[in-house]
Length: 282
Image (cartoon, rainbow, N blue to C red; front, side):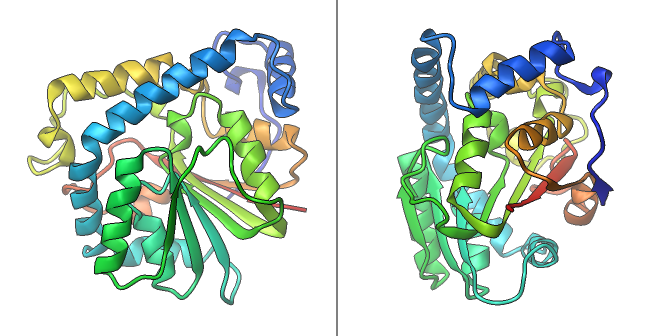
């Protein structure tokens, strides 16, 4: 596990020096938007993102169902267990998609709520939870605008979400707000901005999900990614910087997640190395 260190200038976002980076993100951290057009732009981006994931929601649900029945079920559970305290916890799974993490943790006896902005994803998550016999709550909700009271959850967890957000700084601020004192944020993501989704796929097995997605959908995913500001950041260094600006002190990152989860190049394999960000709220 890597302890947090001071981020060097060459690790800060591309095309920005340290002074520009801190000025820009301090305004975002404290909810000050100097460009009134940003809200309109972000809404348009979210609408487009929802349309994209709506088109992919059914095939995505089938893959998550298969993932729950695979060896990844136990691997993810072992990894997450190692980061959580003992006892029954109230957990918010942000960007739950078809409910993989939410169902996984519900099976452990935790009180879990999964949220996603795409309604068809939530519909499929509810169906999958019923199939698994889980009493899991699901709601359609924006990860950047949570409809929960402050200090509501012991844990906020997310996987492969922050790279899709128009305003991830706002999301991080919201996630920390709804955590109880001593609560834990666990974010599993990758530096997808440094990857290309439409390049050669020789390293992916034939049964991989990306081979089943229409080329125009993969191109749309790449186009969306390129338009998001977070794709210009180098991660997880940028994420750590944001959490420090939010006043967080107990921050840890790990870069060995893929080595523990994706041991085979099968249908679930992710060629972009995953990292984890763990933050404990004061």
